[in-house]
Amino acid sequence: MNTSINQQTLPSITEMEKAYKKSDGTYDGIFYLAVKSTGIFCRPSCSARKPLPKNVEYFPSAREAVFAGYRPCKRCRPLEAHGTPPDWVSKLLNIIETDPTARYNDQFLRSIEIDPARARRYFLKNYGMTFQAYCRGRRLGISFEQIKNGKDLDNVALGHGYESHSGFRDAFVKTFGKPPGKSKTSDCILTAWIESPMGPLVTAATDKGICLLEFSDRRMLDAQFTTLRKLFKSPIVPGENKHINLLRKELKKYFEGTLKQFTVPIIFPGSQFQQKVWNELLKIPSGKTVSYEDIAIKVGTPKAQRAVGHANGLNRIAIVIPCHRVVNKNGNLGGYGGGLWRKQRLLELEKQVNE
Image (cartoon, rainbow, N blue to C red; front, side, top):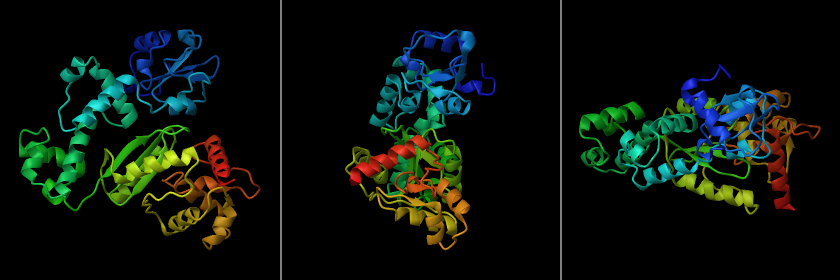
């Protein structure tokens, strides 16, 4: 067993062993099993031959299995499945979205045959917060928007499951860092998942536009969220807005090969040098590539190719700000935070669109 991982994010060894032996798909997304003898990792529901328990290592995410040196199973494709909720989670998310202002306690979860501990583990691992924190974030996110739109504070507080103004105020301050009455001109960062043929993406947006788009298994994702909090001085809560909705539609067209240019508003604060590099990336036409040297020359620092590469890697809005279109001078792909295989497929997709 891998002793370096946080045991609080995983079920017991006995429970996981029982789940993978039965190919129990309800545990998909809860944990991943890696087989020491083959160097492959799988979803619990994988139909491949079951390994001996002594040869199995468990991980809370596909990302951690990859970083431990295991490669994804070709049969169950755990990287593609990562971020796709199992049926019981989809059911729960649909219930929440039907009435996001309601209170969903452990008793409610048991009433719909969902184990509260399993819900907590899944939300903690996949959304970076417990199930209760997710629900609280949705309630507060909605109340936040209503306050900004001028709705009376009394109606907002008592209309979102809070028995008193003080309870609402305390929860609001804990999440947003300021009391409700001083939040009408504030903003928060909304974050959501977007499925794609190359794996799920995590996106985030403010009122002004998209500020994050990353593949969910990217190693730097946690650091990017930390950067967003510092840059925007805003909390991050689950939810969607018009920018995320538009991005979802445009990405669908992009992967279908019917969209060359994104129109969704984006916001990408950074250093002056980073801003120059990222703006040059936006000028690269679909279906074309340029070198790091080309970008360095265009931003006025012809010898700063390494700095250009670093700024390229810190781009927080993948695909829309097309850092994948920058290659080495000799034509080799070079690096890509989302994985070279994705960079290759993105370039191939765009080449086909422009033929």
